[in-house]
Amino acid sequence: MLGRGSGNHRTDDIGMTGRVSVCMATWNGARFVEAQLASILSELGPADEVIVVDDASSDNTVELVQSISDPRVKVFPRDENKGYVRTFEEALTRAGGDYLFLSDQDDVWVPGRVRVMVQALQENQVVASNLSTLDGPERIPGPFLIKDWHVRSQDSRRNLWNLFLQLAGLQCYWGCAMAVRRDALEYLLPFPDFLIESHDQWIGLCANMAGSIVHCDERTIRRRYHGDNLTPAQPRGVLPALRSRWMLIRCLGVARLRGLGRPRMRSGCHAARSRVLG
Image: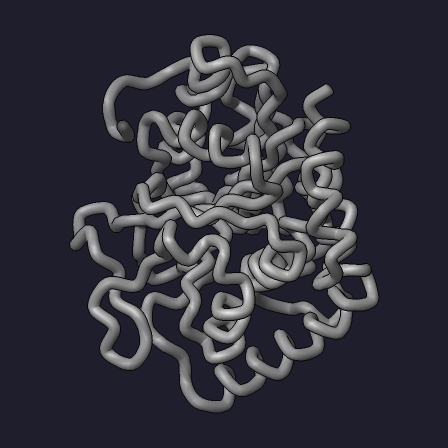
């Protein structure tokens, strides 16, 4: 169960092995990044790591992160702002773990999150969980008057349906609530050159085409909404939504070129897991 206890997270007592890398993108996040890192570090073991790639912040985000006296936190500042998609891409590239968690700079992890997510990754390359808000309602509203926008575990194997929902803008894959296994990087990286937003949708799209994603009913993140969120709290206008749908259609083509959506990729998931976990 989530939300009880903290610290050394996941593996020894339930037979799982492997190293966790948390991939965090920061940009002018000085207000909340320390609280976010505190909630993350309490979930990690001594061999795990937090890869922080800063996208040329103009505040003291880098200094605050560097001041944390924990060798697991590794900071990579940029001189030039390249946007959050490229920042997450670099963080994933630098990560050395077996299980890679995406993280924003301003949320809070629920105790027990790593255990739940890593357990889900034993048989799947990607896991997507739900989230709630800090100081707000547990349910996240979605487009078209959806009152509780969330993924459902029973839809984990409905890959074509999930792809349809993604293309329709109705599938709520939140990057901050996702984690991937290292072998998934073979088809996730590099991100398509034209991808300037919604890296989480790219990850979800590829995982559904590979037939190796699981939806986790638990709300493993408490999301903090404020005026500087990169991810909008409200549905976007028509033109941005259409642009995003076209970008996802292009992503389908890239994923096909990388061999996804074919039976051989799906049957190879178990073998890939064996290589990663030894």
